[in-house]
Image (tube, rainbow, N blue to C red; front, side, top):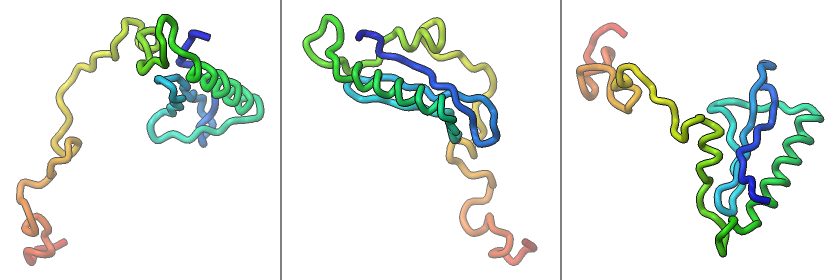
Length: 123
């Protein structure tokens, strides 16, 4: 068994919108990825598909990589090409994130002076 994934399992989020879980093998580990912040709700058929994919991934993870003597520590380029088509993530155009998204502060006044109630100002 040489296909190391990724496999997609269809499901729905808590609002009923179609989503998918991605299962892949990295070395001897089985990795399950969900969209960030999402919850997967699986019906009986989707649960069976998930069980089947996990069982397949566990079998693949326990199989030495082709042409090697031990387990592979890499996902491989096939899975990346399947995801992105050209082997790399898509390039995002636009301006950089604002400082607050990078852990900066959003007010020009540092410390307690930034809180109006502590300066005697209105809240």
